[in-house]
Image (cartoon, rainbow, N blue to C red; front, side):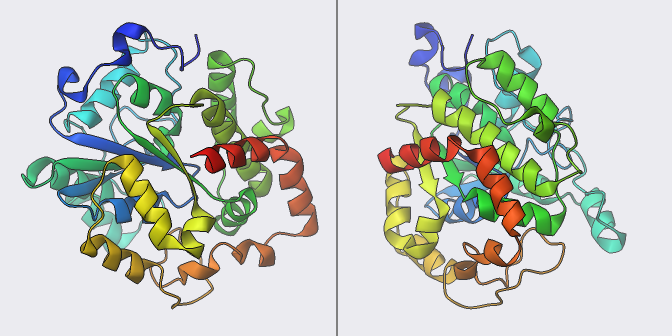
Length: 328
């Protein structure tokens, strides 16, 4: 059964009926697609705060040992449902939070005090002023159909050009196991076109092909599984960077969040045309980077062969995703 085929009995369930004490908004999408800045801006809304990547297999919840859990095709997947509801009820059991690349004082601090996920979780859980939790998590992307249709959680899906994402993966040397993802999507939605088999075999062999394959898998699934879902908002990150204020006003309205002067000031500060065009070596998030340069940075990193590879793997999915963005 496809994730979109939820029974009528669950269609109108409210968050309160599932025991959730706070309202949630999910911000998700492809890794390196802008979930962090958009999640941060949304968390500037009154009485809002964000929880950082509880489904991150390295630093998130205990029991999450594989990236991109889901999709949920039926309620038989009790372990995954338990994990989801532990997030929505703010009853998470978290890993220490240190990454394999963390060393010295950084690793010690994360193991003793907690990493980004734990600190953000405690803020949401313990601060009585927080009534809305922005769940920022690219690794929860395959859960969108379940979360919107059953748990009634609005979802913001961020989209960045496959070239920009591929360049980012190339710069960082990233690669994910696409076999698991491929098999899960095939089981849940057998009619969805998938990238070539060669792309899913070795996550470390070719980071550009891996990024393009992941882009095709995630967005190809989401574009089909969330068609006409009123709780899903598609966001073109390049359009946000070009003209952030009207783009964010639209996202806030769709997510049911109040757009205030504080939010406006946060947007001005985040998207100002300042900082370095070159991101720090080996760092995924560089707060000193000029955001305005991030959409075109890929042109200096991808070769002509890389571009042809991305085009071949994402063919067809790009048009469908652009259609979702236009209709959002």
